[in-house]
Length: 235
Image (cartoon, rainbow, N blue to C red):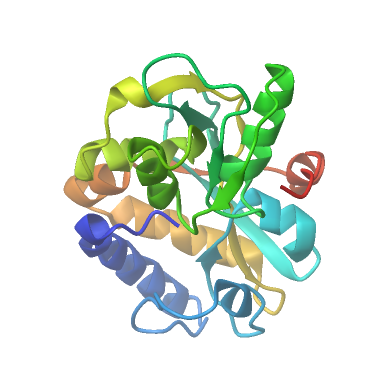
């Protein structure tokens, strides 16, 4: 879910270690990562070995169709291990009346659910909503004046600051933490074994690749913690 071109070498290295650990457990694993195609089809593929999804798709549609493996920990500021939050961004200056929103996807925890809750908490009635298709596109919409407000996954925002020249002055708030983006596998695979392979892969990852991915570890978060979060309204 954080597979920027600048760090794909690190993702490929990480996957290579996970793949080898899986094969050592007699679990068939593909040579390389799949980066194109419909994510919903991949998430629900009965042959899925490992993928990362967002917490909202998991609790809304996937929780009874896949097995929860673990949750990566990106050591985000103000967040418990394995948790994340959203960075609320706006151009400098007062927000206009009924600000226009840019959201990456209506089924995004960080881009829509967290933003919807934040606007309610701050008594903000928003206006037009543009669905951009990606966090980076939402950030660009705000920067270009096409939207007034957006919520960006905190790890994505970190990567945009590092690799895409995002302006830190656009950050105006952060939302409360929620469980992070879970790793999942098909129901046919033992999730504990897949989690062990991920742990072994992380242990074998060299410091440069680990730093590029911002990975600090993986944690076990109970499925109930994901399902306890409310579903947001339709934007």
